[in-house]
Amino acid sequence: MDEKAGHWPHLAALAEEIAGLIGAWEEFGYPPPLPAPDCAPIPPLGDRRGPAITAGHEAIAAIDKLTRELHATRARLAGELRQNSDILMARLDAKYGPLAEGSRP
Figure 1 (cartoon, rainbow, N blue to C red):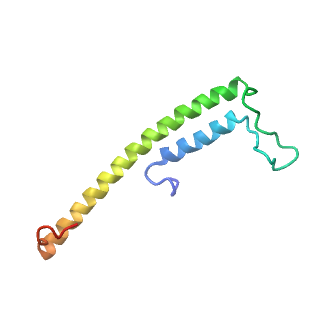
Figure 2 (cartoon, one colour):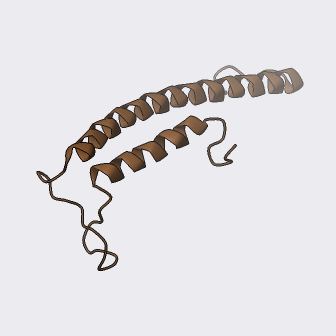
Figure 3 (cartoon, rainbow, N blue to C red):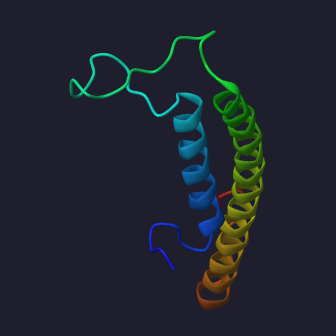
């Protein structure tokens, strides 16, 4: 498993897919200034061909999917953080006794 991806490697895979689709939308050209004389520029809008347009639509769908996945991951993480905090506070309460009412953050 990729260490950077952690337990959610599908997020990294979706991001890579989006990068590839955006590259296809730009017909694998480069924005000016071109990095080398033999590099192709990104075609202007109106000059992009069918495969590039299809890739652009697929990129939008993948971005929407990644957005949904990120929201779900955020909700899961927030819930786990709250649960972890509750467990830690219960341990402290068991070890040292509960704090005075209103003094807990």
